[in-house]
Length: 445
Image (cartoon, rainbow, N blue to C red; front, side):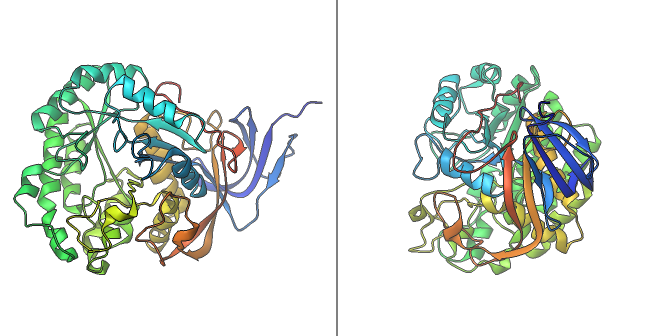
Protein backbone atom coordinates (compact mmCIF):
# COMPACT_ATOMS: atom_id res chain seq x y z
CA UNK A 1 0.00 0.00 0.00
CA UNK A 2 1.44 3.42 -0.88
CA UNK A 3 2.44 5.62 2.02
CA UNK A 4 -0.26 7.97 3.25
CA UNK A 5 2.30 10.70 3.88
CA UNK A 6 5.67 11.75 2.50
CA UNK A 7 6.80 12.75 5.99
CA UNK A 8 5.51 12.39 9.52
CA UNK A 9 6.99 14.32 12.44
CA UNK A 10 6.15 13.14 15.94
CA UNK A 11 6.68 15.93 18.44
CA UNK A 12 6.18 15.66 22.19
CA UNK A 13 5.78 19.45 22.05
CA UNK A 14 4.53 21.48 19.08
CA UNK A 15 2.90 24.89 18.74
CA UNK A 16 -0.53 24.17 17.22
CA UNK A 17 -3.61 26.41 17.40
CA UNK A 18 -2.02 28.77 19.93
CA UNK A 19 -1.19 25.92 22.29
CA UNK A 20 1.84 23.79 23.04
CA UNK A 21 0.71 20.18 22.57
CA UNK A 22 2.02 16.75 21.68
CA UNK A 23 1.22 16.08 18.02
CA UNK A 24 1.87 13.95 15.00
CA UNK A 25 2.11 16.09 11.84
CA UNK A 26 1.59 14.48 8.44
CA UNK A 27 2.99 16.05 5.28
CA UNK A 28 2.21 15.33 1.64
CA UNK A 29 3.55 17.20 -1.41
CA UNK A 30 4.99 19.97 0.75
CA UNK A 31 1.79 20.72 2.67
CA UNK A 32 0.51 19.77 6.10
CA UNK A 33 -2.39 17.38 5.49
CA UNK A 34 -3.02 15.98 8.97
CA UNK A 35 -2.41 16.80 12.62
CA UNK A 36 -3.26 13.90 14.90
CA UNK A 37 -2.56 12.80 18.47
CA UNK A 38 1.09 12.07 19.18
CA UNK A 39 0.72 8.30 19.49
CA UNK A 40 -1.58 7.72 16.51
CA UNK A 41 -0.31 5.29 13.88
CA UNK A 42 0.71 6.86 10.56
CA UNK A 43 1.98 5.32 7.33
CA UNK A 44 4.78 7.37 5.82
CA UNK A 45 7.95 7.10 3.75
CA UNK A 46 9.75 8.92 6.61
CA UNK A 47 8.85 9.17 10.27
CA UNK A 48 10.92 11.52 12.41
CA UNK A 49 10.58 11.40 16.16
CA UNK A 50 11.73 14.49 18.01
CA UNK A 51 13.24 14.41 21.47
CA UNK A 52 11.57 15.62 24.63
CA UNK A 53 13.94 18.58 24.86
CA UNK A 54 12.72 20.32 21.69
CA UNK A 55 9.58 22.05 20.45
CA UNK A 56 8.31 21.91 16.87
CA UNK A 57 7.60 25.47 15.73
CA UNK A 58 6.14 26.67 12.46
CA UNK A 59 8.90 28.09 10.32
CA UNK A 60 9.30 31.75 11.18
CA UNK A 61 8.53 34.55 8.72
CA UNK A 62 10.85 37.56 8.57
CA UNK A 63 9.19 40.33 6.59
CA UNK A 64 12.07 42.82 6.95
CA UNK A 65 15.33 41.64 5.38
CA UNK A 66 17.84 43.58 3.26
CA UNK A 67 19.54 41.06 0.98
CA UNK A 68 21.20 43.75 -1.23
CA UNK A 69 21.65 41.56 -4.32
CA UNK A 70 22.12 42.51 -7.14
CA UNK A 71 24.38 45.52 -6.97
CA UNK A 72 25.69 45.28 -3.41
CA UNK A 73 26.15 41.52 -3.12
CA UNK A 74 29.44 42.15 -1.34
CA UNK A 75 27.28 43.41 1.56
CA UNK A 76 24.95 40.37 1.56
CA UNK A 77 23.52 38.03 -1.05
CA UNK A 78 20.64 35.59 -1.41
CA UNK A 79 22.76 32.50 -0.75
CA UNK A 80 24.30 33.75 2.47
CA UNK A 81 21.18 35.50 3.78
CA UNK A 82 18.91 32.52 3.22
CA UNK A 83 21.41 30.07 4.72
CA UNK A 84 21.47 32.29 7.80
CA UNK A 85 17.67 32.38 7.86
CA UNK A 86 17.42 28.58 7.69
CA UNK A 87 19.97 28.23 10.49
CA UNK A 88 17.83 30.55 12.61
CA UNK A 89 14.52 28.74 12.02
CA UNK A 90 13.28 31.36 9.55
CA UNK A 91 11.80 29.64 6.51
CA UNK A 92 10.37 32.64 4.66
CA UNK A 93 11.84 36.10 4.16
CA UNK A 94 10.50 39.17 2.36
CA UNK A 95 13.31 41.18 0.79
CA UNK A 96 13.39 44.97 1.00
CA UNK A 97 13.55 47.05 -2.21
CA UNK A 98 16.88 48.63 -1.20
CA UNK A 99 19.95 48.48 -0.93
CA UNK A 100 20.15 46.51 -4.15
CA UNK A 101 21.01 48.19 -7.43
CA UNK A 102 18.64 48.76 -9.09
CA UNK A 103 16.16 49.25 -6.25
CA UNK A 104 12.83 47.48 -6.72
CA UNK A 105 10.84 50.51 -7.85
CA UNK A 106 9.52 49.18 -11.17
CA UNK A 107 8.73 45.85 -12.83
CA UNK A 108 12.06 45.74 -14.65
CA UNK A 109 13.97 46.04 -11.38
CA UNK A 110 11.79 43.33 -9.81
CA UNK A 111 12.68 41.05 -12.72
CA UNK A 112 16.37 41.76 -12.13
CA UNK A 113 15.96 40.97 -8.44
CA UNK A 114 14.16 37.70 -9.14
CA UNK A 115 16.77 36.71 -11.71
CA UNK A 116 19.54 37.33 -9.17
CA UNK A 117 17.76 35.23 -6.54
CA UNK A 118 16.85 32.32 -8.80
CA UNK A 119 18.50 29.08 -7.74
CA UNK A 120 20.31 30.60 -4.74
CA UNK A 121 17.72 30.53 -1.97
CA UNK A 122 17.71 28.08 0.93
CA UNK A 123 14.31 29.33 2.15
CA UNK A 124 11.29 30.82 0.40
CA UNK A 125 11.69 34.47 -0.62
CA UNK A 126 9.21 37.21 -1.52
CA UNK A 127 9.80 40.84 -2.42
CA UNK A 128 8.60 44.28 -1.36
CA UNK A 129 8.38 47.07 -3.92
CA UNK A 130 9.46 50.64 -3.32
CA UNK A 131 7.53 53.93 -3.33
CA UNK A 132 9.79 56.82 -4.30
CA UNK A 133 9.28 60.22 -5.93
CA UNK A 134 8.12 59.82 -9.52
CA UNK A 135 7.01 56.17 -9.51
CA UNK A 136 3.37 56.56 -8.46
CA UNK A 137 2.20 55.15 -11.80
CA UNK A 138 4.44 52.12 -11.37
CA UNK A 139 2.93 50.93 -8.11
CA UNK A 140 -0.05 49.09 -9.56
CA UNK A 141 2.09 47.25 -12.17
CA UNK A 142 4.46 46.17 -9.40
CA UNK A 143 1.49 45.03 -7.34
CA UNK A 144 0.20 43.02 -10.29
CA UNK A 145 3.69 41.55 -10.76
CA UNK A 146 3.48 40.09 -7.26
CA UNK A 147 5.24 42.32 -4.72
CA UNK A 148 3.76 42.12 -1.23
CA UNK A 149 3.56 45.87 -0.65
CA UNK A 150 5.63 49.03 -0.91
CA UNK A 151 8.26 50.62 1.27
CA UNK A 152 8.97 54.31 1.59
CA UNK A 153 11.25 56.52 3.66
CA UNK A 154 10.33 59.89 5.14
CA UNK A 155 13.99 60.95 5.28
CA UNK A 156 17.18 60.07 3.41
CA UNK A 157 17.35 56.29 3.10
CA UNK A 158 21.12 56.07 3.30
CA UNK A 159 21.46 55.34 -0.43
CA UNK A 160 20.87 58.00 -3.06
CA UNK A 161 19.12 55.69 -5.55
CA UNK A 162 16.15 55.25 -3.15
CA UNK A 163 15.00 58.82 -2.36
CA UNK A 164 12.51 59.72 0.35
CA UNK A 165 8.91 60.82 0.03
CA UNK A 166 7.69 63.96 1.76
CA UNK A 167 4.40 63.79 3.64
CA UNK A 168 2.41 64.77 0.56
CA UNK A 169 4.13 62.06 -1.45
CA UNK A 170 3.38 59.52 1.26
CA UNK A 171 -0.30 60.45 1.25
CA UNK A 172 -0.40 60.21 -2.55
CA UNK A 173 1.13 56.72 -2.36
CA UNK A 174 -1.39 55.69 0.30
CA UNK A 175 -4.26 56.95 -1.86
CA UNK A 176 -2.95 55.11 -4.92
CA UNK A 177 -2.50 51.89 -2.98
CA UNK A 178 -5.93 52.18 -1.35
CA UNK A 179 -7.47 51.76 -4.80
CA UNK A 180 -6.28 48.12 -4.83
CA UNK A 181 -5.84 47.60 -1.07
CA UNK A 182 -2.06 47.65 -1.28
CA UNK A 183 0.12 48.07 1.80
CA UNK A 184 2.56 50.92 2.45
CA UNK A 185 5.35 50.14 4.92
CA UNK A 186 7.11 53.22 6.24
CA UNK A 187 10.49 54.06 7.72
CA UNK A 188 8.99 56.62 10.07
CA UNK A 189 11.54 59.22 11.15
CA UNK A 190 10.87 62.88 10.43
CA UNK A 191 13.54 64.53 8.28
CA UNK A 192 13.16 68.03 9.76
CA UNK A 193 13.43 66.75 13.35
CA UNK A 194 16.72 65.07 12.51
CA UNK A 195 18.08 67.94 10.42
CA UNK A 196 17.64 70.26 13.41
CA UNK A 197 19.04 67.79 15.97
CA UNK A 198 22.65 67.89 17.21
CA UNK A 199 25.54 66.81 15.01
CA UNK A 200 25.85 62.98 15.09
CA UNK A 201 29.57 62.74 14.34
CA UNK A 202 32.05 61.28 16.81
CA UNK A 203 32.52 58.16 18.94
CA UNK A 204 30.12 58.97 21.80
CA UNK A 205 26.96 56.90 21.60
CA UNK A 206 25.11 59.53 23.62
CA UNK A 207 25.79 62.06 20.83
CA UNK A 208 24.48 59.67 18.17
CA UNK A 209 21.36 59.00 20.23
CA UNK A 210 20.73 62.74 20.57
CA UNK A 211 21.00 63.08 16.78
CA UNK A 212 17.99 60.74 16.27
CA UNK A 213 15.52 62.09 18.87
CA UNK A 214 12.33 60.37 19.93
CA UNK A 215 10.41 63.30 18.47
CA UNK A 216 11.55 62.27 14.99
CA UNK A 217 9.70 58.96 15.31
CA UNK A 218 6.66 60.50 16.96
CA UNK A 219 6.25 63.24 14.34
CA UNK A 220 6.63 60.82 11.46
CA UNK A 221 4.29 58.20 12.96
CA UNK A 222 1.65 60.88 13.53
CA UNK A 223 1.94 61.75 9.83
CA UNK A 224 1.58 58.09 8.83
CA UNK A 225 -1.52 57.75 10.98
CA UNK A 226 -3.03 60.92 9.54
CA UNK A 227 -2.30 59.77 5.99
CA UNK A 228 -3.84 56.34 6.55
CA UNK A 229 -6.90 57.91 8.16
CA UNK A 230 -7.42 60.44 5.34
CA UNK A 231 -6.94 57.96 2.49
CA UNK A 232 -8.41 54.88 4.19
CA UNK A 233 -5.22 53.15 3.10
CA UNK A 234 -3.22 50.48 4.90
CA UNK A 235 0.03 51.54 6.55
CA UNK A 236 2.66 49.68 8.55
CA UNK A 237 5.26 51.37 10.76
CA UNK A 238 8.64 49.71 10.47
CA UNK A 239 11.16 49.02 13.27
CA UNK A 240 9.57 50.95 16.14
CA UNK A 241 12.26 52.03 18.61
CA UNK A 242 10.40 54.72 20.59
CA UNK A 243 7.94 53.31 23.11
CA UNK A 244 6.41 56.78 23.56
CA UNK A 245 4.70 56.31 20.17
CA UNK A 246 2.76 53.23 21.25
CA UNK A 247 -0.12 55.22 22.75
CA UNK A 248 -0.87 57.11 19.54
CA UNK A 249 -0.77 53.89 17.53
CA UNK A 250 -3.15 52.24 19.98
CA UNK A 251 -5.56 55.17 19.75
CA UNK A 252 -5.40 55.21 15.96
CA UNK A 253 -6.38 51.58 15.78
CA UNK A 254 -9.16 52.10 18.29
CA UNK A 255 -10.44 54.82 15.96
CA UNK A 256 -10.44 52.40 13.02
CA UNK A 257 -7.29 53.57 11.23
CA UNK A 258 -5.62 50.70 9.41
CA UNK A 259 -2.11 50.86 10.83
CA UNK A 260 0.16 48.13 12.17
CA UNK A 261 3.62 48.25 13.72
CA UNK A 262 6.68 46.07 14.22
CA UNK A 263 9.76 46.17 16.38
CA UNK A 264 13.09 44.32 16.16
CA UNK A 265 15.21 42.00 18.30
CA UNK A 266 17.93 44.60 18.88
CA UNK A 267 15.47 47.08 20.39
CA UNK A 268 14.20 44.32 22.71
CA UNK A 269 17.69 43.10 23.65
CA UNK A 270 20.08 46.03 24.02
CA UNK A 271 19.91 49.35 25.83
CA UNK A 272 21.67 52.64 25.17
CA UNK A 273 23.34 52.48 28.55
CA UNK A 274 25.30 49.36 27.60
CA UNK A 275 26.54 50.56 24.18
CA UNK A 276 30.24 51.45 24.52
CA UNK A 277 31.52 54.59 22.88
CA UNK A 278 32.96 53.76 19.47
CA UNK A 279 31.05 50.45 19.24
CA UNK A 280 29.55 51.18 15.83
CA UNK A 281 28.33 47.60 15.42
CA UNK A 282 25.37 48.80 17.52
CA UNK A 283 24.43 51.60 15.10
CA UNK A 284 20.99 51.36 13.55
CA UNK A 285 18.30 53.85 12.64
CA UNK A 286 16.14 54.52 14.58
CA UNK A 287 18.67 53.97 17.37
CA UNK A 288 18.71 51.60 20.29
CA UNK A 289 17.24 53.63 23.16
CA UNK A 290 17.39 53.46 26.94
CA UNK A 291 16.63 50.45 29.11
CA UNK A 292 13.33 51.82 30.39
CA UNK A 293 12.26 52.32 26.78
CA UNK A 294 13.19 48.70 25.98
CA UNK A 295 11.03 47.52 28.88
CA UNK A 296 8.06 49.49 27.58
CA UNK A 297 8.53 48.03 24.10
CA UNK A 298 8.23 44.60 25.70
CA UNK A 299 5.07 45.75 27.47
CA UNK A 300 3.64 46.94 24.15
CA UNK A 301 4.51 43.66 22.49
CA UNK A 302 3.00 41.53 25.25
CA UNK A 303 -0.17 43.66 25.30
CA UNK A 304 -0.68 43.35 21.54
CA UNK A 305 -0.04 47.01 20.79
CA UNK A 306 3.02 45.97 18.75
CA UNK A 307 2.07 43.41 16.13
CA UNK A 308 5.25 41.56 15.30
CA UNK A 309 9.01 41.20 15.64
CA UNK A 310 11.23 41.07 12.54
CA UNK A 311 14.98 41.35 12.14
CA UNK A 312 15.58 44.40 9.93
CA UNK A 313 18.71 42.49 8.89
CA UNK A 314 20.68 45.34 7.30
CA UNK A 315 24.29 44.31 6.69
CA UNK A 316 27.16 46.06 4.99
CA UNK A 317 30.84 45.52 4.37
CA UNK A 318 32.60 45.71 7.74
CA UNK A 319 34.68 48.70 6.61
CA UNK A 320 31.48 50.74 6.32
CA UNK A 321 30.85 50.31 10.04
CA UNK A 322 33.97 52.48 10.61
CA UNK A 323 35.34 50.56 13.54
CA UNK A 324 38.69 52.11 12.68
CA UNK A 325 37.46 55.48 13.95
CA UNK A 326 34.41 54.50 16.00
CA UNK A 327 32.57 57.41 14.39
CA UNK A 328 28.84 56.82 14.76
CA UNK A 329 28.00 59.60 12.33
CA UNK A 330 30.09 58.13 9.52
CA UNK A 331 29.25 54.45 10.12
CA UNK A 332 26.62 52.52 8.16
CA UNK A 333 23.45 52.12 10.19
CA UNK A 334 22.36 48.52 10.19
CA UNK A 335 22.52 45.39 12.32
CA UNK A 336 23.04 41.85 11.02
CA UNK A 337 20.80 39.61 13.09
CA UNK A 338 18.87 37.25 10.81
CA UNK A 339 20.27 34.02 12.25
CA UNK A 340 20.02 35.22 15.85
CA UNK A 341 16.55 36.76 15.86
CA UNK A 342 14.69 33.81 17.41
CA UNK A 343 17.09 33.13 20.32
CA UNK A 344 17.47 36.86 20.99
CA UNK A 345 13.70 37.31 21.29
CA UNK A 346 13.19 34.07 23.21
CA UNK A 347 15.89 35.05 25.72
CA UNK A 348 14.02 38.23 26.58
CA UNK A 349 10.57 36.68 26.33
CA UNK A 350 11.15 33.88 28.82
CA UNK A 351 12.68 36.37 31.28
CA UNK A 352 9.40 38.28 31.16
CA UNK A 353 7.09 35.29 31.49
CA UNK A 354 6.11 35.04 27.82
CA UNK A 355 5.80 31.66 26.12
CA UNK A 356 6.84 30.09 22.84
CA UNK A 357 3.21 30.45 21.78
CA UNK A 358 3.68 34.21 22.13
CA UNK A 359 6.95 34.15 20.19
CA UNK A 360 5.35 32.20 17.34
CA UNK A 361 2.60 34.80 17.17
CA UNK A 362 5.12 37.65 17.01
CA UNK A 363 7.60 36.03 14.61
CA UNK A 364 5.55 33.67 12.43
CA UNK A 365 1.78 34.21 12.41
CA UNK A 366 1.63 38.00 12.40
CA UNK A 367 4.46 38.71 9.93
CA UNK A 368 2.81 36.21 7.60
CA UNK A 369 -0.54 37.95 8.02
CA UNK A 370 1.07 41.35 7.44
CA UNK A 371 2.46 40.24 4.08
CA UNK A 372 -0.64 38.25 3.11
CA UNK A 373 1.17 34.89 3.21
CA UNK A 374 -1.88 32.68 3.65
CA UNK A 375 0.01 29.37 3.84
CA UNK A 376 2.86 30.41 6.12
CA UNK A 377 3.38 30.93 9.84
CA UNK A 378 1.24 28.18 11.39
CA UNK A 379 1.24 24.44 11.92
CA UNK A 380 -2.21 23.84 10.47
CA UNK A 381 -3.79 21.65 7.82
CA UNK A 382 -3.41 23.22 4.38
CA UNK A 383 -0.35 25.26 5.34
CA UNK A 384 3.11 24.78 3.90
CA UNK A 385 5.16 22.21 5.81
CA UNK A 386 7.64 24.78 7.13
CA UNK A 387 9.08 23.85 10.52
CA UNK A 388 11.81 24.72 12.98
CA UNK A 389 12.98 22.33 15.69
CA UNK A 390 13.88 24.49 18.67
CA UNK A 391 15.63 23.52 21.90
CA UNK A 392 14.38 26.29 24.22
CA UNK A 393 16.42 25.40 27.29
CA UNK A 394 19.82 25.18 25.63
CA UNK A 395 22.07 28.21 25.79
CA UNK A 396 24.99 29.35 23.71
CA UNK A 397 27.44 32.23 23.48
CA UNK A 398 27.35 33.99 20.12
CA UNK A 399 30.48 33.26 18.11
CA UNK A 400 30.49 35.47 15.00
CA UNK A 401 32.62 32.91 13.15
CA UNK A 402 29.71 30.45 13.28
CA UNK A 403 27.18 32.78 11.66
CA UNK A 404 26.07 32.21 8.07
CA UNK A 405 25.73 35.91 7.24
CA UNK A 406 28.23 37.10 4.64
CA UNK A 407 29.96 39.25 7.28
CA UNK A 408 30.37 38.23 10.91
CA UNK A 409 30.31 41.67 12.56
CA UNK A 410 27.48 41.75 15.09
CA UNK A 411 26.65 43.46 18.40
CA UNK A 412 25.56 40.05 19.70
CA UNK A 413 29.18 38.77 19.72
CA UNK A 414 29.94 37.15 23.08
CA UNK A 415 26.36 37.43 24.32
CA UNK A 416 24.74 34.43 25.98
CA UNK A 417 21.38 33.56 24.42
CA UNK A 418 18.75 30.91 25.11
CA UNK A 419 17.42 28.53 22.49
CA UNK A 420 19.09 26.64 19.66
CA UNK A 421 17.57 25.76 16.29
CA UNK A 422 18.41 22.14 15.62
CA UNK A 423 16.73 21.58 12.22
CA UNK A 424 14.41 23.33 9.78
CA UNK A 425 12.17 22.28 6.89
CA UNK A 426 10.75 24.26 3.98
CA UNK A 427 7.69 22.74 2.31
CA UNK A 428 8.53 19.32 3.73
CA UNK A 429 12.19 19.29 2.73
CA UNK A 430 14.90 19.65 5.32
CA UNK A 431 17.18 22.59 4.71
CA UNK A 432 20.81 21.79 4.17
CA UNK A 433 23.41 21.82 1.44
CA UNK A 434 21.15 22.53 -1.56
CA UNK A 435 19.16 25.71 -2.29
CA UNK A 436 15.58 24.79 -3.16
CA UNK A 437 13.64 27.81 -1.86
CA UNK A 438 10.89 29.19 -4.04
CA UNK A 439 10.41 32.80 -5.13
CA UNK A 440 7.01 33.88 -3.84
CA UNK A 441 4.52 36.26 -5.37
CA UNK A 442 1.54 37.89 -3.71
CA UNK A 443 -1.58 35.90 -4.40
CA UNK A 444 -0.01 32.47 -4.73
CA UNK A 445 1.72 32.41 -1.35
